[in-house]
Image (cartoon, rainbow over all chains, first blue to last red; front, side, top):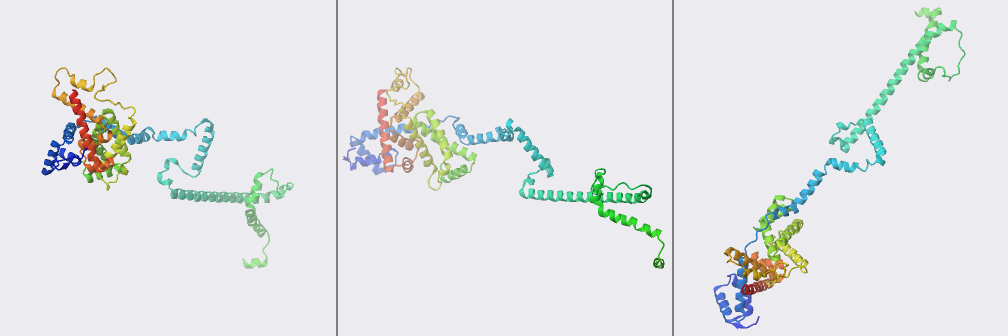
Length: 248
Length: 198
């Protein structure tokens, strides 16, 4: 662009004002100078014509209508992709599928026996611990609940063992007492009639396995019982001493 | 649209995963972006793909938009323009450098655009003439250099002000005005040549 000045306006200024002139933003005085320059300048006049034509043709261009499915495609490519991904994990890969995916390697033939044994052991432990899977709730899986349950199970088991031991002990004590009474009643009758069998070795219980138990569990009780049964007998047979008479 | 605070609120909702807000945003701007892409590429298919690409990019980079720094539209237009420039560079080698004298199809013996405009047989109605004229303008627009084309599109078809265009194109406002003037002038020159041929 030449820097010729027409009507007190250089071409550079004309070019600067060209945009505003086309858009109708020039002030009246500026507009008059602009038009005068365009009419007299051999370069700027044609430029204004072309610019006007180009501007008018662009303004005449209508807005293009986008395809109807465009918004749908955009949403499908953005939020739809996330939804679809979430749907795939939530629906297509439901909890059964996920569990099956975890269990599948364990169910391989070479691990079948090990898996079975592990499952059996687990269920046995649960059973011994008194845990019923059908009664489990999510609250029971909290660490504090598990700890309390374990403590409760321990004390419960301990109490059962102690009680069992006490019961067994009582039963043996009663059995020993009964047997001692029978022996005490039988001994005086058999002493005079039968010859005593040869004395066995102290620990020989081969012919009577219960005898050893009797010796072990009721030695003290028998001694005490014998004392009760045997001691009164001489008192009835012996004549009363003078001291005794006096007392009675 | 483009009330800055309203758009900022909409963007914030989108960031928090509000699907309805995102749908509203897409509904508000897809037409504008599609038109920008179409006017730049002159291809409906490319415009559709690019518009979709633009919104995917926006969806992923919405966190990068700083609501306090500027309006949403220049940011959106900048994103679109960057994708258009990438697309232009990508397709530069394979792009058909069709001119008014070149055929619109691969058939070398086919009529040129000027022939088709002139050889209309029975007198076309006004609507058809308008459509053909619009095609000529679009074809002439495609002949402009990318720098001039994007400047006139943003100004005359997207109605952006010089400051926002300067922000999008990353050039001074004076350069923007100069490019717009040159773009309009070049477009008018191309069209007058075409009209003479017709």
